[in-house]
Image (cartoon, rainbow, N blue to C red):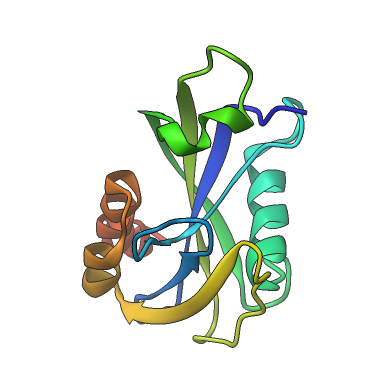
Length: 151
């Protein structure tokens, strides 16, 4: 089954703007990123996708008291990296990424799936942006102070 070329990017952060990044297991470089993942069905909402991916990739339950998931209303359309195109239907070259933020009360321990990610860390937002491999991920993190001040 091919992946749907619609995904979420979830910037997980604390009230003092420390951002969680996780290191991909299948990348050759030091590939740090926020939580990302594709919709399972086209009917799955962005919110449902975000909550599922956060739970799968970090063990964090976005629905618990003290957490706030917010839709930032931002989307990025980008070319799928060649090394991952085989996961999509033939001819699919672009992915639409929807950006959400998840505020958690504190920098908490994370449970990783070692097949997907090998490490995690909480960094101040500017440092987190600098560490991201993906330009769209870095840009989303740089928007964090604006979205936090609006809440």
